[in-house]
Image (cartoon, rainbow, N blue to C red; front, side):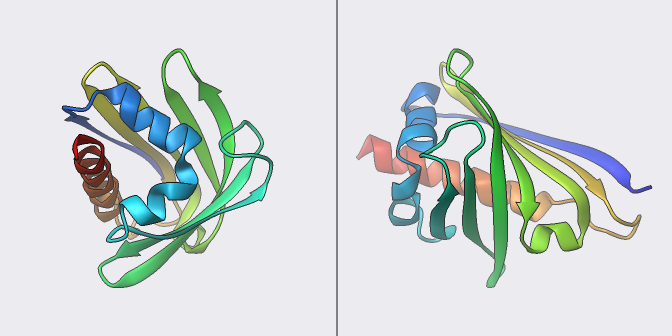
Length: 146
């Protein structure tokens, strides 16, 4: 059995957490144009935009390598401005038995939570990926404040 872990990062956003959530929830297809340094590609494979059961994929830049994340939307809570994405494919699953990403926003804060189970004790914590999410959120904030 692998080792379970959880990483959480919250950042204060001047544009308001609701604005970040709106971009991630309803305008996700624009993210490669908004944060090209972080995100190369976004595609909806099944379903619509960001709805429970939809399957999407992302190509994320990490240290000049590309991470492919194929995810299914497990839950969307409009009141809490939260989206839960379960990784179901891509190269993240080479290192992790399970991987879930939760984005949530409130007032002036946006939070990213990574929950995972490593395949081996030698598997690194996904700190770089968490950093990429934070960079992406800051870039979205800059875009919204223009």
